Length: 81
Image 1 (cartoon, rainbow, N blue to C red):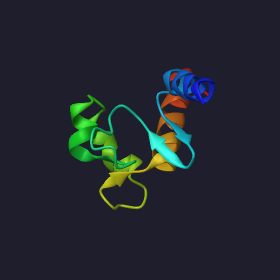
Image 2 (tube, rainbow, N blue to C red):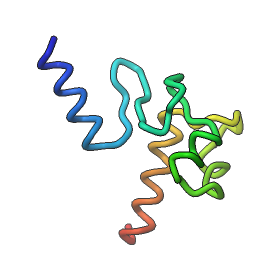
Image 3 (tube, one colour):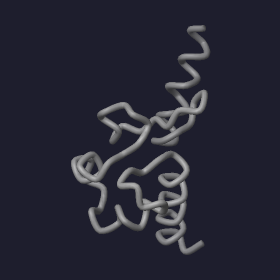
């Protein structure tokens, strides 16, 4: 059990966001509801103008797949891929 917990912590540290047992874990999710609302997004210093772009389903919260898609697109923009 302890080894599994260490692996989860290391994976979370490496990716910043991850799904563990179906959960979305990101430090911006201060409410721990597995989603990031706009207040959490802005408080974490993510670009406010990008929130609506990341919120693909328009429900006012960023879930795991939405965050990963947004983050991947941001990385691609910055690396030219």
